[in-house]
Amino acid sequence: MEELRKKYIEAISDAADEASLEDLRVQAVGKKGEVSLKMRELGKMTPEERQVAGPALNALKDEINSALAAKKAALADAALDARLKTEWLDVTLPGRGRRQGTIHPVSQVMEEVTAIFADMGFAVAEGPQIETDWYNFDALNIPGHHPARAEMDTFYTHRAEGDDRPPHVLRTHTSPVQIRTMEKTGAPIRIICPGRVYRADYDQTHTPMFHQVEGLALGKDISMANLKWVLEEFFSAFFGTHVETRFRASHFPFTEPSAEVDIQCSWQDGTVKVGEGDDWLEVLGSGMVHPKVLEAGGIDPNEYQGFAFGIGIDRLAMLKYGIPDLRAFFDSDLRWLRHYGFASLDQPTLHGGLSR
Ligand code: PHE
Image 1: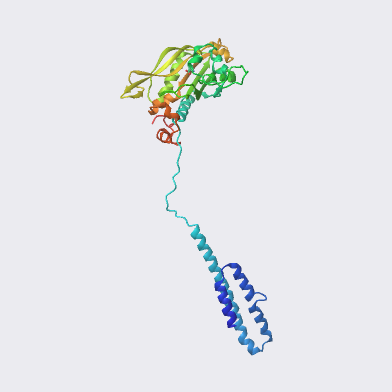
Image 2: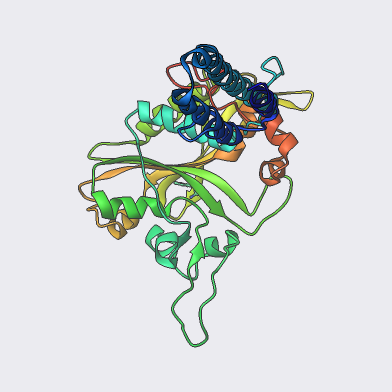
């Protein structure tokens, strides 16, 4: 018995895992285990022998069982310890900072412009950036021979050899959306259209792609006075201060009469401030929609009239946020974007106050 005891207690303490523990249990105290077989022999013993051997065997069985249970618990503890070691985590470490993008000043200004005009009842309309010759020019009263076509430095798309339809163009202004909207909804109309436009031009104040916001209001008695009020209201809300406008007679094929509009500003040490001083800065073209344009859009010029305007968005962003070079807008330089960009949750809104 002492041999059995030694053998199993040692083997149990050396067992490496639960499976070998189970083997040992079967070998020792299982139905046909060594200890169990010994117990069966008790029957053949004399009562005296049995009185000694019985309790001793029972004690041995108990001892082996508790050794098994203790070892099993120890193995489980060791496994848990090992896991804890590999899954260890220092919750006091500082978090890994994630780079956050910023809202581009142009996107920011588009949001602001949209919010201000929405407040005056203007909906947002959109049109394609690759435009037909007709929408970009003809429908806007710019026929084929018109000098405005050359002035606009248009990008033309390619037509296959032998295909002599006029090529599509990258829209040179947002004005084609006027026609598209007239066709789609008829009058009355009150929309703005912010978007990208393209002209082959590149210097400190010109990039081949830039942004405009078109405005169009058609009704039965809309006049130039309404145009002036809307624009002054817009600029004052946008710059957060009362802004005087100056209308200068001008010419666009699609408006009659036409006016270029300047906003009041001051120049001090090379920086410009809007809404004060007695200098003027040109920011948009506008006028009363030409009857031919209304006709092209399927609207009766004897019944409806109204105004249209086109504002350069990039210029507005430069003025409001003091950004000196237009080209940097489209360089995708991360340092520039981080400096001039807006936090996504920190956008000035109409209800929160547009100016900061
Ligand atoms: N489309 C003109 C431009 O790009 C601006 C404009 C729009 C002028 C609407 C008058 C009316 O210069």
